[in-house]
Length: 71
Image 1 (cartoon, rainbow, N blue to C red):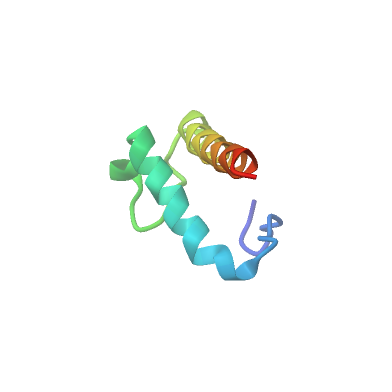
Image 2 (image 1 turned 90 degrees about the vertical axis):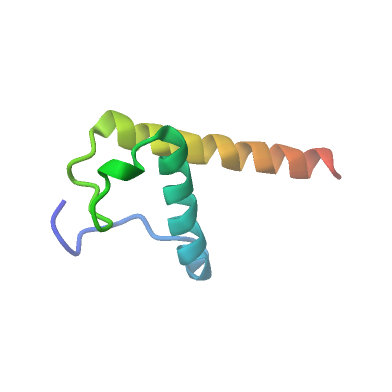
């Protein structure tokens, strides 16, 4: 996708910095933060990017399940 074609928008725009930090936390957990240069993810393999996204989803589901269990 070219510049200006990003279509995924946050539902809560105020969470942008928190989501950015969360993404890098998961990238660190997957072990690819040393490959990210200045915020550029273009040289990261799709498989590794998918692993980061998968870890993010897994963590969000765990948090939601914990919140449901607390009710």
